[in-house]
Each structure stands twice: as structure tokens, then as C-alpha cells.
Length: 371
Image (tube, rainbow, N blue to C red; front, side):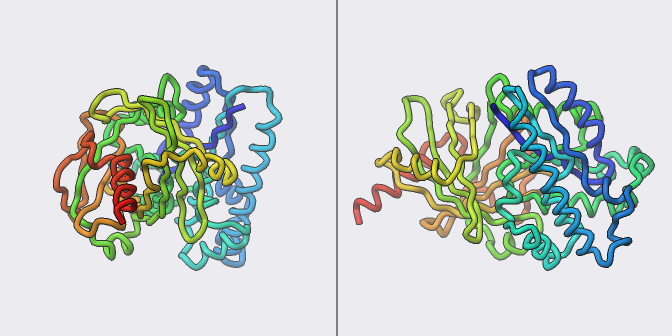
């Protein structure tokens, strides 16, 4: 059985309700059993439990996060009993959405109240798809009339949209779906992003990579739309034409483990088939025994940055103090990229062998041997 849990999130009046209908229609036809976890905030608020009816906002948020996690646990438990090969659990908002409605101290207390940590709670979802509020780019369609729990003005909706993107920044698979097209095209883009993530008809990923000047780390650290992640990447012995690696990814001593397989579709490496699965710590340690001894583990700090509804990943390595590598995954080959003005882009290095992660792993190994 294959169970995948994704989040559909977004600012107020972003199209989530219609998106759920599209997901049900498209993925049921593709052979998935689709389960939907309703938005917890709407359930509570329409039932009379709200930030303004509880003692404090934190009192309300503690109730909400607890109910949300219980619902997700029960849906996953039920899914494991079903006679189905492929199950897609779709969460109408996920745990990190709650962060947008609390200050940092309140959120830390809410996390502690469920006995968790941010890495486990954020990265327990396989993918996150953010639909941008109509208040950004389609303001004529913004309304509060179709949701009794919605109350935000256009300005408040835009601010909340920004907070939600910031809350999820740092997730390994966050995609932002904007309003640069018609609403139908927006939902088609969402469907294609989910299809690509699920690997239906081969998950072809288009990625571009750029060499940049060593970034201002203080600017990144204080940027509310940036999140710092520690990564250790180890390459495994792999068949010819295939790359396999395992990765520890997390922060503050809490990590998730993944195994990834990449097969290039052309010589440039711009297009490739990529599959990635979360694995247990025991499986990670078992796979470590099959590490490619010609390559050293690669340690890096990744700054996940959202800018102009794009998701950048800036990798800073301990052996460079003059440069770093920026990556972005594209939904279309000719997609325009808007870079943050604070970053100095030297040039595109997509496909250049010396800047591939495998080449860096080999370089580190040679330096270790020479020492």
C-alpha cells in the first residue's frame, strides 16, 4: 500500500474548496483512493469555538492543533485498513498553518503542548501546495461571503498569505501556485504539480542551478520568508546511469531521513526523473553501509527562501567563503525567474559537472585523503 499525505493551503479566498473537488475528480480517475481531512479552524469556529470565545488565542490554538493532529492520525489509521493500492490523504491546511495566527512564543507553547518538534510536525507531510489568495493579483474575485469563518479585508488577506508562506518555508517540497493565469489554469497548474510530485507517468523534474556570491547570512537569518536547514547527504553505490543518495534533513537536533533516486533525461541534467521517499532512522543506518566510498558525505546549510511566489534553495558549504549555490525547480522550461535583489548572481551552472553534488562529494574525499 502506498499512502501519501499532502497539504493544500493558501491565503483567504484562494480556491481551496474548488481545488478539493478537482483533486477528487482527477486522482480518483487515476486510481487513487482520495481522503479529505476538513479544515479544523472552520469546524471549530462555526461550532462556536474561536479565538474570541476562548480565554485567550493560545487557549484556542492549543485546542485546534490537538484536534488537527488527532484527525490526521485517525485518517492515517483508517487508510491502513483499506483495500487499496494507492491512497492520497489531502489535508485542508496542515499543522504549520497555525503558526500564522500566533506569535513565536505562543507557537512554541502550542508545539510543546502536543509533545512535538517543528521538524517532525512540518515535514510529516509529503508535500505542501500553497494557493495564493485572490487578494493578490485577482482582487476582483476576492470575497468573504463563501466561508462563515472568513473575515479578512483585502489587505489582511495579503498579509495572512505572506505569513502562511513564511510558516511553511523550510518544507522539502513546498510549491506556490499564483494568480498569474485564469482560475481554471491556476487549478490545472496545481493538478500538474501534484501529478509531478506523485510520479505519475514519470516524475520529470526541471531544475536550474546558479552560482552566487556568498550571501549575507545575517539578512537571510532575519528574513521572515527564509528558513535554515541542516543537511547531510551521502551517496550510495548505484547502477550505471542512476544516482542514489540518502539525506538527513532538519534542525535543532531533530531530523527526517530520505532516500532519493535520480535518473537524468539529457546530458545537461536540466531534466531528470526523481523519486524521493521518507525512511526510518533504522533504514537510513542500514543504507549507510552501502555508501559509495569514493565520495565523502556532504554537509551543508540550506536556506529555503520564498520570494515573489518562488521557492529558492541556497546551499552554503563549509569549504567556501566566497560563493554558494542557488537552486530552483521550475514547472516550465521557459519560466521566468525573479531573483531577490540582495543576491548577486554570477551565472547559471545547470549541468556543469564541477558544481554537481556528486563532484563536490568526490572533491571532499580527495582533500580528506590528501590530508
